[in-house]
Amino acid sequence: MSLVDALGFEVPSQTVNAHGCVVATIRSDRERVVLLVTAWGERLDPLWRVALTESIERGASWSMLFNGTHLRLIDAGRAYTRRFVEFEVDLALDDERTFAALWSLLHATAFHAGSHDDRARIRSLVDRSEEHASGVSRSLRDGVLSASADVLGALARPARKRGVSPSLDDSFEQSLTIVYRMLFLLFAEARGLVPLWHPVYRDNYSIDSLRAVAEQLRPASGLWDTLQAIARLAHAGCRAGDLRVTPFNGRLFAPSRTPLADRRDLDDEAARRAVLALSTRPAPAT
Image (cartoon, rainbow, N blue to C red; front, side, top):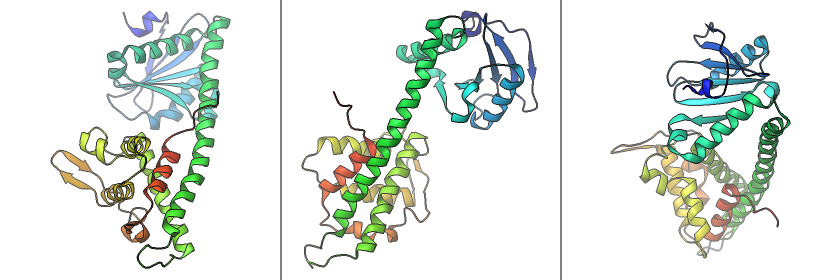
């Protein structure tokens, strides 16, 4: 039995649109969902506008995009948010909790117009997602401010041997560069732009691995050296065995942008606080 059959949909017809997608309107008793099936492994991001156009023309509240490897669900009634939920099919089939989430969400989408409970369930999921996103945004804003202050404090301290304080302007500019580097790499890790699949990179050169170290180390040691090693790898890239790191060789990661970070007397505790500020959220108050 197919997923469409299991959910109780009817598929009266299907067509191939100008973008080469097979398009079908699948129906439950009261709901319409547009299903777009594209070539195996094709990127789904460029099909956002196509999915919304097909949904509007067919009077559907939801769009499903499927490329054989990923299934993406778009709320066509809230297109302005540009948010979606996506499942990697192989992972969903291998993990019971992920599959249960996939099944529950698709079932709620298909039947949320049919009963009060299902309407409440799907909208509750959407509302909780919006609330979570807002919380992450607020936390990240506060984290950037906190991390910038910690890094600035470390860079602006007088050198131990010479007792000379660096320029405040230089310290401020370089502290922002270091914070932006960490933010960029966190984004790259979340989007799969760096080889997290490789254990050497994942365990030694990712910001997430540094977060795990920062959570455990107190007092901290060696964190500035690790941050600099990560920045150098991001700038130069590497080829080592089956590990391939594509260089981000623009100005952001250029070593000449942050000479103050090469000092040997920087406060590792400040680096620890900065990493945690950017990569974690405060626990909710109880």
